[in-house]
Amino acid sequence: MQYSTHFLDRLREGDESAFRKLVDTQKDRIFTLCYRILKDEDDAEDTAQEVFMKIYQSVGQFREESQLNTWIYRISMTTSFDLLRKRKRKTPWVYMSSFAGVQNNAQSRSWEETLPVVNKIHPHATLEEKERLQKLYTAIDKLPENQKSAILLHYMEGLKYDQISEVLELSVSAVESLLFRARKNLKEIL
Amino acid sequence: MKGQDIKKQNSDHMMKKPNELHKLDHDLKTLSQGVYLKPSDEFINRVMQGISTPVLFQIYWLKTPLRAAVAILLLVTFIGLNAFSLKSISNYADTSTQSFEQEFTEIEFTMEDLGWLSTNYPQIVMEE
Image (cartoon, each protein chain N blue to C red):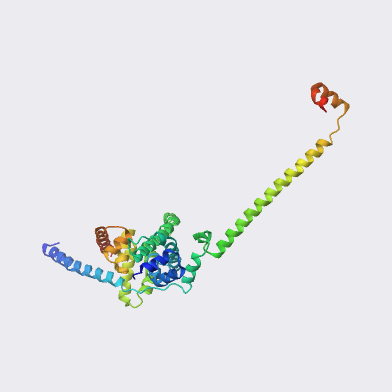
């Protein structure tokens, strides 16, 4: 979606009706992206809300070097992955319990977590497709963060290489290489 | 394993590989066919309320009303205790000064004390 310069100016001036319009047009896309990363609806909603707060607070510094959409994608991805990282830091007991012999298999947890994601995001897929998608989502979860981001933006959000390079602040060739490595790793995992 | 078997296995592998590649590409393309989910109905209102909320309440920990209430209670208790302790200190300082002054004025010197004072501190006694 393209936004006019006049609309951007209104956002920069803190016009609440313009901001409400932005939230209305972007909320589903941002919420779904956060949900794809976090796999929890409450977390995704809280994170999407945080994303819009960040947009409101920092839109004054948006220089139009990239499109507003890609800038919003960048904020959404950073905020979601930040929350994931915080969660990982906060659960040292996972390692403790594994030492104590308690079964807490991240692999099986990830497998269970991806089923509702597939059911919600791909409601019209056949049973066989859903099973394949669940395997794929679980495999994507195991990729390094930058490869996961590239896959998410390219295959799920349909962004082109140059747009991904703006979101991830990388060169186009680096994005190509990221996607190549991501596909290679996925093949190995699957 | 015989040479012929190895050859057959390799050709099977070669046949399988493009198939798997094609399958992965197909599955990756299926990812884009998903639908966008909708957040709850109050989402926009929550965001709009959020932008007009004071910065203190935008802190992640204070997001839930219960936590915010606990934080306010703690803050009020802290301020109250501080005010109480300051008042106590000042009261104590007042009463102790008063009693000191009272005690000091109520001292009665005996002739012996005066004799001792005049020997040791004749100047003070002369001034008094």
